[in-house]
Image 1: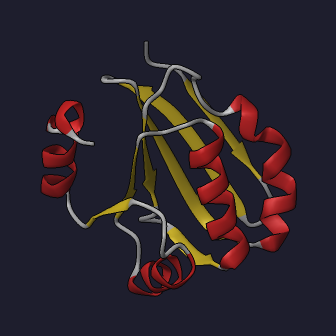
Image 2: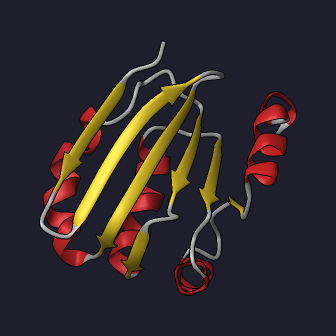
Image 3: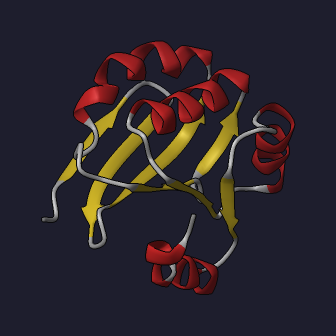
Length: 127
């Protein structure tokens, strides 16, 4: 199954694609903050296939994220019960916000396509 969904708000663009191995690829561009949170939250339930077990959040084009954005990501992962969550190509500033605010979350940080491929190949054995 390979389904896709996309939406845009004033400062945020989000797309989701279901990929092999029950993996949701969530690409976030723009700004994920308190303003976009209030717009995006009602749409959240429509964004993923409920059979997914892993989530990749592609942040390569995300320019800004505040604590509310982190709250959204953590809640998104918890709401759908993802066993594996990876943050892909986040900027140094966004990684800093994630590490400070989401200390107890088990995010995997992927900096390159090689890291991503290794992680995907080992999803079945990941705890």
